Length: 112
Image (cartoon, rainbow, N blue to C red; front, side, top):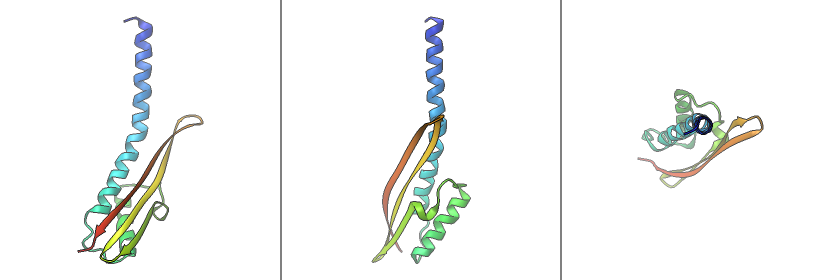
């Protein structure tokens, strides 16, 4: 392996590591939000309670890049909540080139 090919390999490895370090936190935050939506919902009685539950979890998990009411829509149908989690995160890669991660998922949460 020549020195040039080793430098190319190392620069590609560094680029991939940079992309990973920028995107992984967004996926971890999304995973934390999914966990909040689907667990510990025993005490939730209304849509307002559900928003408050998610808001508290966002504070605990230090999720500040998104606004709660812009990314979550909650409605109550019969004995369950329909939660639509939809938002996108942008991260600057190089000057005017952005990485965009879009999350869009619906959950049905049954009330006990």
